[in-house]
Image (cartoon, rainbow, N blue to C red; front, top):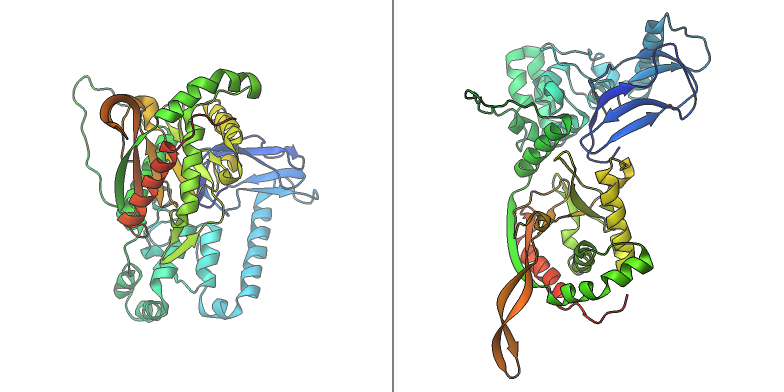
Length: 440
């Protein structure tokens, strides 16, 4: 469901225990921080067990239901199916990692501190030789402090071989000394940051108290994580877009008649951004630990405000392969789907660079937060008529020009001021050199 999606909330079961289910028939509705979606059944049969109830959170990789495909398991005896599935899973783990199995016992579903560990997390821990004490000491980034696949991977990256031995020997001699080993990685984790206590705010008389909806909670967590993970720097450039304004005014009616689409400034601006990414490909990267992943594709995410007030980022795939007409259709189509809650999971996956149009709300500039796991985001300010000095061979004079600010936030771990500043300047150069006589 997307490389950055690690968990989903069960919002509705479309079938009840005992119901017959056809192959690819919608079985359950889930919601992630990206999009709501129906999951189809992977086989035909009878639903005999539901393992996650409505509003519960499941990790990617968790088993959420059991389906009898041959009629041998009745709805009245679902526990047998669970035990059978668990036995097959355990046998697979033992067969795949005999050395690990001989060194560690099967991990319990819940730790000594009451934490629940999903089958995926337990399997990963057993394969990597992570003890129950080490798991208990991990701070989980999932709901209610659950340990997720991402937490285990982060712990393994930071643990190294020496701390693993220390943790094993320490647990054998003194349980009190094992916890510090597991909770002192070489670099701070997002999970530990999330455990910082927020202030408790008391309402005053007459104040209205509103609970965040699910999507707003997820957005809030994602924003806090991004600011913690990436040291943000923002560079600003003012661009003269008079030629673009004049061209759009001249062609918008003809464009609408010929293409059946309204042409806005957004696809024109995205076209300039794509050109600049080609000139500075190190803007189009992601960071995984100490590894930089240079993206081959240029997939532009465009932050879109929803009628609910929440935010979603549909993605224009392979934007560098589209001309201005193609970009216009992609922008309009995704924006319309977002407003009508018709986005599909693939519409919001795979973004490599994000654009947010703060100018649509009358803002002249902004300091946008990076959309992880990307390393940069560009805020487009409002286009305004302003007095400007115009240089000509005959001399300088004051004239009215259409100008806008570009605000470029970037991850200072991998994007220095030179690259971040040159990139946004190049975008402005492409905008200012726009041909007002260009045919379409």
